[in-house]
Length: 67
Image (cartoon, rainbow, N blue to C red; front, side, top):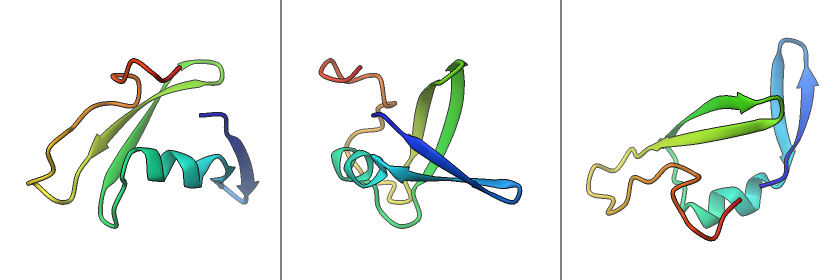
């Protein structure tokens, strides 16, 4: 996912690419994401599901078709 972050005060917000990322990873209300910066502008995203019955708990780079 390419992202464009916007800073407002002490907080940063994603405003480009987020909708596609959320849809691709089937994010739901209550899911928790941890962003681990691995390089200057590269993150590994860990997804913790609010629904314990969700069938896949892959990180954002576990899929072969993603960069």
